[in-house]
Length: 114
Length: 114
Image 1 (cartoon, rainbow over the protein chains, first blue to last red):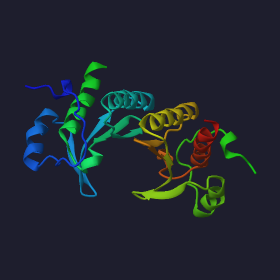
Image 2 (image 1 turned 90 degrees about the vertical axis):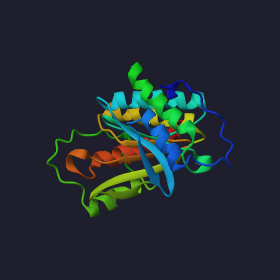
Image 3 (image 1 turned 120 degrees about the vertical axis):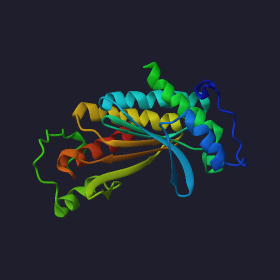
């Protein structure tokens, strides 16, 4: 099975179409713990991660921040005591792009490494 | 004027009453940029901070995390590109406590220092 986490984001210049439902359904098995959530008509990938406490949550937020900076693609991260919620979507196209699935897979990979 | 940011959180053991509306109105002038927001019947203090980019937002998130650990009182922090949204409330009493106003003032203070 292709490992999405090993892929790199491609620059998204905007103007590209968002992934359609069939494409999304095709990619979801690669990141089965992520939900597709729609906010103001914009689809996002979301996953809630449970951590031990606030410090561990903040540490994970920083790990996500590092891969975001590396790929120049940035999520929304909610940091709370014992919990981090991550949302990936592509602002420029107001929806989901292959890059978002790659970043979701990379986010999953962070926990496997730690 | 009393500087709330110089105060320390007192341990909240739960069972204490939440601040009432008159008490909240009395404290709001100390943190005028914060809104009182109700989520699932629980009042929270919320402020949105604009930052330059993702790295600056994450840096600010970490600064807030440091004062949260110091006072053992933890917020919800939403980190995005160029924006940090912070919410303070007291989980144990399902509402607002003096501690939340102290932490809001300390959060404001972080930006003044940087």
